[in-house]
Structure formats: C-alpha cells, structure tokens
Image (tube, rainbow over all chains, first blue to last red; front, top):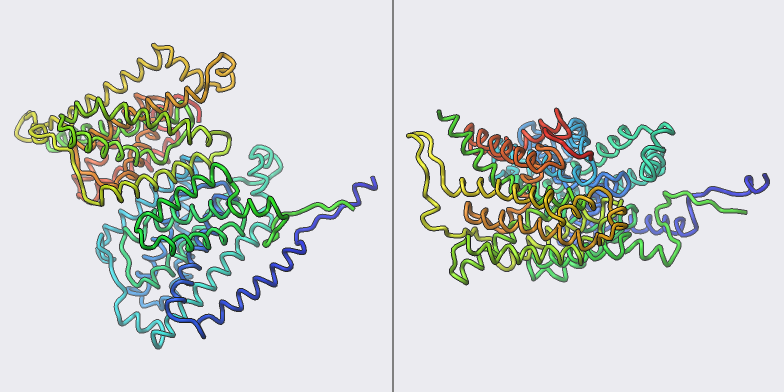
Length: 337
Length: 288
C-alpha cells in the first residue's frame, strides 16, 4: 500500500521551466523586431510565422488526433477569399476580417467533417483533398471574386489598412505574431486539457477509450474544427500580405499542405517542438536551394521520405532519444519516491 | 438525342478513369496500400511512353510492349526497396512516403520535361470516329481505351482466380501470417502485386498520353479520379471499380454539358453525394 502513495505525477520538468524563460525571451525579441529590422526581415518572419502556425495545425490534426489530412489548403484558400470578400464587398477592415474568417470557417468545417469523417485513415486523407478541390473549382466559378484568374485588393482599401507602408507592415507583422502565439498556445492548452487525454486514449485504443466514455466523434470533430478555424485565419493573413488571390494559389496543395507536411515529418510529428524545428529546417533548405527552382521540393520530399522510414519521430525524436527533454510539457510523468 | 450522346461520351471517358482506378484498387486489395503517388506514376508512364515513341519512332501500341515491363520492373523495385518498409498497423508511413514520392516525381518531371503540355501523336486515329447518326459519333481512340479497360479487368480476374500467382495474391490479402506459414514470401508477393499494378498504370499512362494533352502537374487529379471511381464502385470489386469509373465519367460529361467549368466539379460532387448516401460504395465486397 505504501508504494502506491509514494509516487508523484508531474508535467513540468526543470528543462521545461528553463524553456519557458527561453520562450519569453524569444517572444520579447520578436516583439522588438519591427523597431530595428528591415522590411525584408519582417516579410521573412511573417512567412515563418504563418508556416509554423500551419504546421502546428496540421500536427494537431495528424500527429495528435490521427486525422491525416491532405486537404488543409481548403481552409487556407477559404480564409483568403473571405478576407477579400469581407474587405472589398462589405467594407470591413481587413485585420477585423481575419477573426471573422476564422469563425465562418469553423462553421463551414462542421458539415465538411460529416462528409470526410465517413472515410477512415488514408481514405480520409484523399477525401479531404477532394473537398479542397471542390472549393478551388467553386471559387474559380465565382466571377465577382475574379473567377479563375483571381483578383487584387483595390489600392484604396490597401491604403485604409494603416496610415503608411511601414505601419501596414508592422500591423501585419504583429497580427502574424499574435496568430502564431495564439495557435501554439491553443495546441498546448488543448493537449493539457481533457481533450489531450481523450486523444491519447483514442490513439492507444479506440474501443477501450469508447468503453470508458470518451466520445470519439465529438473529440475528433472538436480538433478538426479548431484546426480548420486557425488554418483559415492563417489563410486570411497570408492573402492580406500578398494582396492578391487566385484559386490556384489559394488552394495550392504544394504550398499549403505538402510543404507543411514535410515540415512536421522532418521536425517530429506528434510534438509541439517538432514543427518549430521543421520550420527552421524548411527555411534553411529553401534559402540554400533557392537558386535551383523546384529542386528544393525534391530535396525536401526525399528528406521527408527518408525521415519517415528511418526516423519516424523526426529530428525532435532523435534529440529526445538522447536527452530527456520537453520544452512544452504536455505529457505526464510518474516519479517514484 | 443530345443527352444520349453526352452519356455515351461519359461512358467512353469513364473507361480511362476505370483504368486509373484499377491499379489503385489492386494495391489496396492486396497490400492495403493507398498510394498517393498513383496519379504521378500514371503521368510518369505517359512520359516514358512519349520518350519511347519519339526515340524509337514506333507506334504507341508497340511502345506499350516496352513501357509495360519498364513500369512493372520499377514497381517491383519500388515495393521491395521502399514501400514494403512502410506497411504495418500505422497508416502514417505509407501515406506520407507515397505523398513524398508524389511531390518528388512531379518536380522531377517538371525539371526534365518543363511545364509544357505534351501529347503522343497517334496520327489519323486521333480524329477517326464512327458516325451513328448526325448527332452521335464515337471517337475510335476513346472506344479503344474503353475496350482495353474491360480487357485489362478480364485479364486481372483471370490472373486472380485461375492462376497460382493469383491464389498467392488472394491468400496474402486474406491473412498475411497464415500465407507466410504456407511458404509464401510476403515481400516478394507484394513486389509482384506492385509490378502487376504498375503494368496497368503503364497502360493507363500511355493511353492517357494518346487521348489527351498532359503535363507534369496533372497527376494528383488523375489520382482523385481513380480514387473516386474505387470508392463509388465499392472496395474489393474490380467490376465495381469499372462501374465507378463509368459513373464518374458520365457525371463529368453531364457537368461539362451544363457548363464547361462544371465538368470536374460535377464528378467530385457526385462522389461526395455517393459517400454521404452509401459510404461503402455501390457494390462493396470486402469489409474495410
């Protein structure tokens, strides 16, 4: 009996407490960036932030909930188009339109889930892709949004975003930072909540978790909708920065899903740290190979395939094999006394 | 009369989709592998066909005699070297590895052949048609594709149910462990199954190249058509897959009749509608 009472369940470790300080320092540096860095650096960091957020969202779906989607570009595109529709036709300030897009996409993702959830595993993956194609083809038919050739945000509305170009860059930068921090925090808090526990149970055994009262459908639906909403918000941000949208770019599999999947697989699927490392590697490779056109997608694909086969837990998995580290404490550990 | 013509054209289109789907259906049936690179492998076969026809100056149908073994050999190697390592209870490795392959093949083709749209020249066959009346005429080339699709399915049915290899395929599909106890080498059988599937991919790719223009980027949509045909028909039945291909072709033809921009969309919507009403397809045979 005495043995049972002599253990302790904890989540944070010394490393994770040190890491928390580290994250706060990094966040502080990122907040200061617009006041000393150039335009190009800010553009890069905005892109970094939206890829990292997309990666966190795909990881939430595939890594934590086992819902391997190759159709997340559906929500990126929808987010972009909603931003354009809201700002051009309803006169809503683009930055305000971003959260509105998130809410609308959450609503749209619910009926979508009822269709794609009929497919399991790999079939679910291709089903989500079909849905994304349906959206792409539908938006190509909407002539008021530019049809197949797309549209730009009129200069008048661009000027209304902020008082000048520098202010506009700053506004978009801070929006990107808020979305990144909120998205990552959402994954972290979800995983520490009862949803995280339920997902772990579902991953280990669906029938067993079902019999213990875990509502599998509701849990997966919640994760799907949450991930769709944030992905849509990121989509709105991407096209606020680009100021131009067309169906092929908005619903691009290669840009918004393939690259993101490679990021997560290379970094380490099923962890919050993995996507961060993966995004760093992605941008590293991209700048190294930027002169070689589509070669970098080939290299990225090869690295991802090799990782999947020989190191399925990614770079972060290799690191944690050597060192017992957790920078985002979501797992519980038992310490015997 | 006009609508009859639309449906006939849809059926002819469906023949090609059934061929796309057959390879996919085989891989799933035997190895439980959903191959996301399937469409890109079809496009790869189309390019191999193009190179063979242009360098050797032979007729595309003769070219098939060269392309089929090349693709089948590639399939065997791909399965033994790469895909066998991904098979297991976890769905993530096969999915992500074939997804990676898809992106690699697409970009490689883009590097080698550029984004230009290509086609295998079939000469007079291209415009030849059988005229039924003033409103209905059947293109000879699409008709050949449909007949070949049916022949391929007949051949596969024969292979599955009348030969020793087919028995080994079915045994491995039913229970891998028992099949191994009976002395069947799973890895080798899977390699052979992939070779057979890729032989079908080779035929599909060359016919695609003879029938329409193609470029490195069209692979993914061919995968989706094939996948939709498999699911519409129901898993585990090759004749169901043919029916699925035809239904998809007819839906697209009707969509195109309403508005050219609606062709592909109508096919996808038909697929989603069938998924909602009959999630296991119209003629399901196997469970899962």
